Image (cartoon, rainbow, N blue to C red):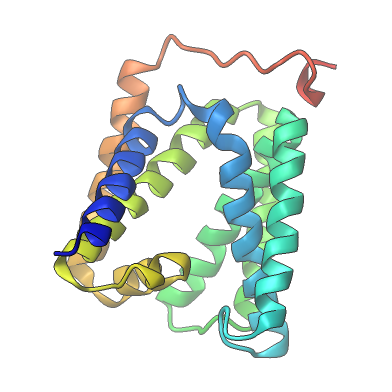
Length: 213
């Protein structure tokens, strides 16, 4: 193992554990980062679904992903309420598109539309029923678990450092039942841990955010 891989693994592992098991406490710091990641992925996948280009295989997909990610990140940083809505949308989109993948659909227009509908539906549910905390716990647990899995795959040589910037982790999880099972178990443990430890903790968004206005 090279020093580069060792450092990257430690960083990814520490970040994943903190997010998966303590994500709610650190959420205000993580919010713009998660917003950027979700926006970047959504932008690139939208081009993939509509124009049938590979995920991040063209300069255009990188640019669109970056611009959408930047927009989501800035909005999440400036407006807490909008940030939570965007993350809820991202979670719903991932669930909808992921379900279509499980039943045999590639990421095309149909899967994209299902994901978009699921994302809008979940965002509306979160806003109207005021269940932001539970969505935050779920998002941070699943994102953290993916980071943990990515660090382990890096150590085992399943992916390279360059792959960490793509969807290699998600692809590897989908292609292996054991990795998928491990990922789901980690996410469930993260959710249980956050609920058990942070059940009396309530976030207090900065007064400048949209939520407090």
